[in-house]
Amino acid sequence: MQAAFDNELDRLTPFKGEDVNVLLAVSGGIDSMCMANLFLNSKLGCKFSIAHVNFSLRGEKSDGDENMVKEWAKEHGIRFFSNKVDTLKYADEYSISTQMAARDIRYGWFRELISEYSFNYLAIAHNLNDSVETLFLYLLRGTGMKGLSGIRETNGNIIRPLLSFTRAQIAAYVAENNVPFREDETNKESHYMRNRLRNEVFPQFEKINPSFLITIQKEMFRFGDVEQIMNDLYKEHQGYLYNVEDDVMLINIENLKKEKYRGYWLYRILQGYGYNETQISQIDSSLNGQSGKTFLSSTHILIRDREYLKVYQNREEVFDGRVRIKVFPKPEEFNPKATEDTLFIDGKKVKFPLKCRNWQNADKFKPYGMKGFKKLSDFFVDLKLDVEEKKKQIVVTTIDKKGNEQIVCVVGKRIDDRYKVIAATKQIVSISRF
Image (tube, rainbow, N blue to C red):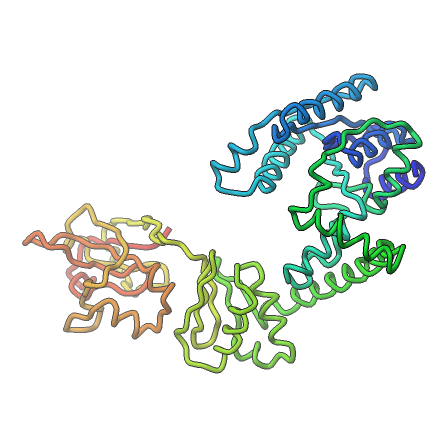
């Protein structure tokens, strides 16, 4: 196993020999202690240190895990880092599960160590069983192509050199080499879905196919290739099927309707926006309907507009409170024609300081070129703005001689006709977004 491990490690790390400095995540369990011993006896000669997190979830047993790893590191002259944390308190503070809290804690701390001590890699002791378990968890949750290739061998600077080895191979190596380890008794409990797969389902698969792990491993390689092919196709569809402008996902409705597998592409585009299968099916059905229909996920809002499905981040507060206002004398050859970004008004007709705010339902103004007043809500309808675009509209106001607030302009859209630049204007105010 040592030779096979060295081959895997050599393949996963482009740096060689002493140029490699690896941080090993070692819990004290059989997998991570096996990995530590394989690093210790590796012929590649890379430097490594050990990091252990005491999650304080099993009382004295957690302390025993930490002490065992610490003694092993000391015996072999390996630099040892430890971090004892109150995982339950962390989970309560952030209203997350204990498992999620433990993950956040350990990876957050690992990143700190990597940054402070300039490690090239973080080695995690996931094995083939873990990867196959992950595949089945994704299948049971119904998450499409994601996860069908199992756990990744690499993810940024994270490497998993044990990923091609089964739990049985690891157990045999540990027994043969007298590697110490600590058994976490909760692994034998089937409260969690992963443990239930491990303890109850996989033994049944092994009765049907004793080498089912290797069989699934081969299939995961193929799934990985298919996923990469689909990712490449997805990128090729950018510009034709979808695009992102100003953090807004725009999905071209007519082009999407032409696609033979439009259901898949809609799922592929929206999978990162919090929409479930039922919602995506409803969105698909809306393609032949009228514009204006909205769909909410936990993080985003999708609007079926005229030409596009528009996906916005669902923010309660959209006003950024920032505009750029410049005051300057009117040049002799000044053209007051507004641009998409900048509007011009007569500086002598307003009272400073000007106020910038979100528009309100009762707001009205005299759009440039019109004699009468118009409600902003109606003005936005004329501009064919969707719900989210309306939320983002900002107005600049001034106070008139009677102390009343008046709208000077809708930023980026239109000035109020009362404040337009005329031949007699001496001072110009330009208003634009940052």
